[in-house]
Image (cartoon, helix red, strand yellow):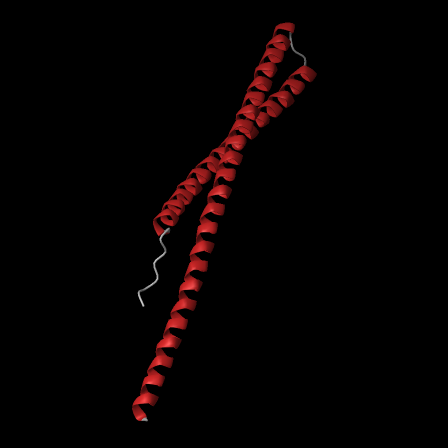
Length: 147
């Protein structure tokens, strides 16, 4: 009997390569998420540090011009922190989209692997039946030759 050959093997290989590429892309996007989280945290930390410094300077006393500069600087830092937060949301959405693509690719690959396993077990069953039949035929031939 000829050896087992899964006819959809090229498709399975292509799906596996696609899955591998998607996993690499997902890792890249997850690294971008981590980097953006650090940038956002740094922006909020800068704002908190500036707020603490401004409060200390107010307690020590400052001029109206200094107070106005302080207020403008705080608004700029708040806007920067908000921009970093928005960037993080966008990168997280992209990561979630990639994650969904990976899930779909895994489903497709897994279903092809299941089909391959099913076809392999059908092949093995047929091969075992053929071998059993061949042995029965050989045994019958030996018996008839012995008689």
